[in-house]
Every structure is written in structure tokens, then in C-alpha cells.
Image: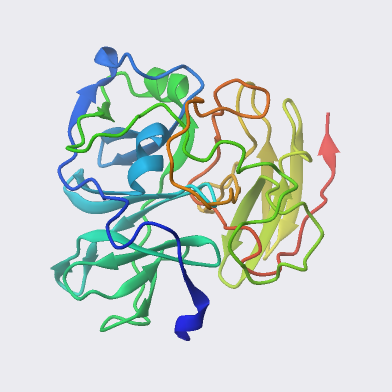
Length: 303
């Protein structure tokens, strides 16, 4: 892997600190989340946990164990990608931190056991002793807080007591998700103009084939039916939510790649362009803008 593909993202190694000793609060005791705020929903063997984006946006990685499985809950603010990985690899449990570097405008992690570098999108080791190895993904998705609270009344929520002092609830990337603006850092396939650079899409990947369905195709109350890779799937827009795929075996997500030229705290809450808290809801996984050309599916919309 040519080191020229990596760019410094601002803060150095662990300048964005991972949460290594996560603390949790019962759903009924949470008072710092608004109904439409986005959280990462993770359920393993009946253990349901919510990881608020307002916390992950400041830490990007949470090393945790859920349902007896050691996991890394990750979030890249530049891509709006929420991915959860099993930290076990070859009989060793890895712990992850941030390298301070980016590749294709996406988070590059490192494991503390071997110092290997890992791409967040895809979970593959790019540099170091473990190069070429991949982490197993654990199903997760971004949902609105109200949805998680209703579905998992006995669940647990990551607390703001992270061991770090951060202005949780404020967005350090205000305005970076403007849909027409390019990513601040270079990405592959940047000349692909089929969609605006930060258009949110439902991304579905099966083997070597992938499809992106723009949110604008599947708005509220509409469904988009497609067939590709030998399977049929449907993406439906739900009230107060983003479109989501109905194929539970397929990782899909909202895609956004806000720019990262500064890490300074801003006073605005995490909001959508309308000014209301953005749920950024969608199935488990995301895709950084322009990682590779995708066969976009302008599928039929049913009223």
C-alpha cells in the first residue's frame, strides 16, 4: 500500500481519543438525547446498546464487549459511516485507536497489539504485520433515539462519562455535510458525477457487486424495488427516518462525507440542513463518497 495514499487529518495519533472504558446508562435514565438524534444500534445475543453519534463524533472508536463479544464500534464523521467490528483475530483480541491519518477521506485506525493500520470502511489492514487481514463485521445500524428507546426499553446507552472532556451535543463539523461541496481530502473516482459528492444513499453490497440508491429516490412513504446480484431487495422511506433496505443480509447505510479542515468545537447542535436534529438513519454500514464507481440504481418508485 503506497503511503502516499494516506493524508494527515489534523490531530495526530490518538489526538481523537478512543473510548476504552465505556460506561452505560439505562434507557429510562437518559436525558441528554433528543428524539430524532442518531444513535448506533447494536444488539448481540440480546444485549442492546445505543452509541450516540454526538459522542462518537468526538471519539470515532469505542472498544467494548457486547453480549460476550469484544467489538469496536466505529464512526467516521467525514463519511457518516457507522461500522462495528469483532475485535477478535487469530486468537487475539485487538484494541483500536486513531492514527490521525485518512485514506479516501475515511478514518484509518490502528491496533495497539501490532500497530497495524486499518481502513475503517471495509475493516482491512493496510499497513503493518497484519496487512491483508480483515475484521469480521457485526450487524448494526443508525437509528433515531426515539426508535431505539421504543424498541429496546431495557437497553443501555453510552454515557457522556467517557473519561474525556468534550462539548458533547455540539457539532465540530458544522456545514461540512453540504451536499454539493467536495470532500476536503482527496478520494478515488472523484470525477464520477452521477451524484453530488455528499449525496446520502442506501448502499448495498453483496460479494463484488454493489448498488447505491439515493435517498431522494426513496423518500418518505415510497418504496424502491430492485433486482441485482441474483436477489431482489426493496428500500423504503419511513416517517421521520431515512430510507432503509429490507434485505437484512445486506449492509446498507446513509452516506455522507463532510469535510475535515478543523477540529475546533462549534456551538451549533448536530443538525440537518433544515435545522432539526438529523437522524441519519439507515441500515448497518456506510460508504465514503467516491471510494469506487457504483452501479447506481434509478429503480422505479411506488407511491
